[in-house]
Length: 68
Image 1: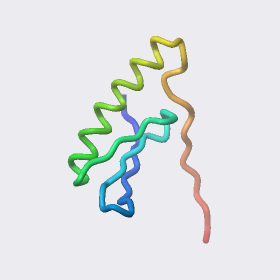
Image 2 (image 1 turned 90 degrees about the horizontal axis):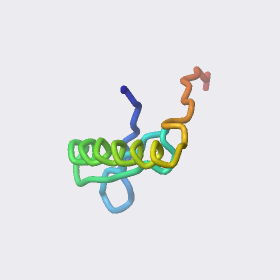
Image 3 (image 1 turned 120 degrees about the vertical axis):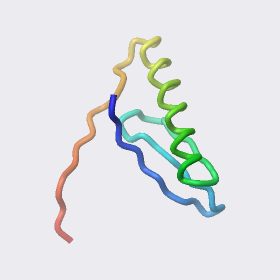
Image 4 (image 1 turned 90 degrees about the vertical axis):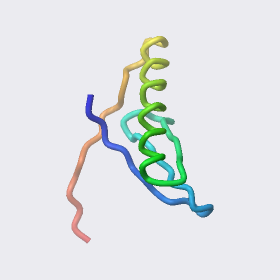
């Protein structure tokens, strides 16, 4: 399964990683590499929990073009 993640540095300097296709699936790390590794683990756990609860594994995520 291929999923998009976002990476953003917070006010404390930590890199926050989130998976928009899985509501509430967020992790962090000191570096982008650490945050990416941590979000991989979080995604696996979130998918497992959603499957056990009978919830859809993901929600629809679309890419759109916006002119600024």
